[in-house]
Amino acid sequence: QPLLGGTPFYATPSHFIRNAALSETYGDLGNILHLQDWYAVMVMIYRVITGGLLFEQTAKQFAGIKNKIVISNRRTGSELAAIETVSRQFWRSAGLEFQKKLRAQEKTLKTVPVAISPYASRLLISYLKKDIRAIDRSIRNLVDSHPPLSSAANREVVLNADHGKICALAADLAGKTRPASAAGGNQARMLTVFNKLANQKLLLARKRQLSARLAKDQPRLSAYELMIVMFN
Image (cartoon, rainbow, N blue to C red; front, side, top):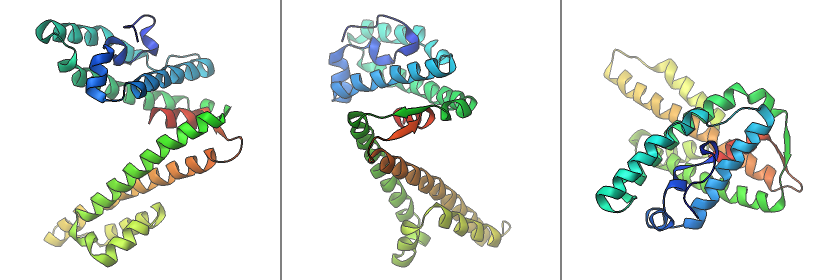
């Protein structure tokens, strides 16, 4: 692709970086170009429905991002040294702004249904499946890294429990916690683990539900749901 031309409100750092450097950093150039198009589509969806700019504050970082890339090119002859830094800076800001804007416009975005084409459904499902596998691995790693949960019996109970069951276990443990004792300290640590598990289980359930809905004939999502799937 040519380097950036157009409005920064629809752009990502990859617009400033040459294809060779993107390929060397991420491997799959096609996927990067595809994802930057998704980013622009999210901005358009948000603009059409709300009249606002989804990443207005994040776009203000582009002057600094461009300077870092220019400096990297002068010093090393390549953007490679700057890619990780500018990407982390940009996506941290974009993630925070995305959450803030969607919370503010949640009611409006949920009233707009979007018909999902068969091709888009397959694409979204493929990304959701990757997310589901990653969350499942995260849950298993969390369980296996804490000895009280990693015994055969406890492990199966926790891995098979849904979000509601994990919350019930956490509530039961919270009622037994004694902060002043050593045992209470261990219980407090386990309570933190259960809260993390509850969040992961809830996210896993939502991803599975969205995947199942997209697998149906002529699926529809609200604009709010679609944007969350696309951004994540």
